[in-house]
Length: 86
Image (cartoon, rainbow, N blue to C red; front, side, top):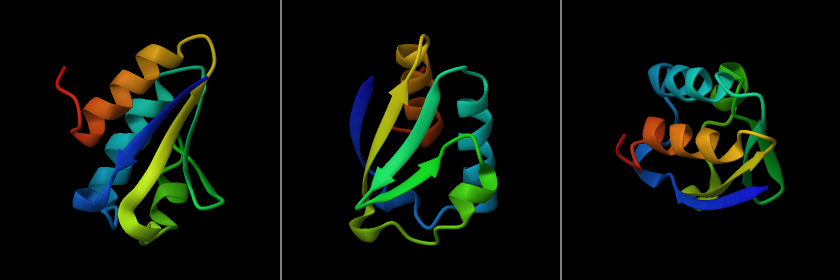
C-alpha cells in the first residue's frame, strides 16, 4: 500500500474535466485507488464520486493505492493532478 499526502487546493473544487482526467488515469490500473480526507473516502476511478465532493476540507488529502500496480498507478494519478511530470 502506498499513501501519498497531497495538497489539492489549486485544483478544487474539481471541474468536470479534472474529474474525468483523474478517473481516466486511475481506471487504467487494477489496484484500488482512493482519495481520503478527514474520514471521507472517494473512489478515484469514479468521476461521479469525485464530482460529488465540491470541496475537500483544507485541500489536504491522501492518495491511497493498494494492489499489484500501485506504484505505477500512484505516478499516473500524480501526473494527472499535475504534481509530477511524465
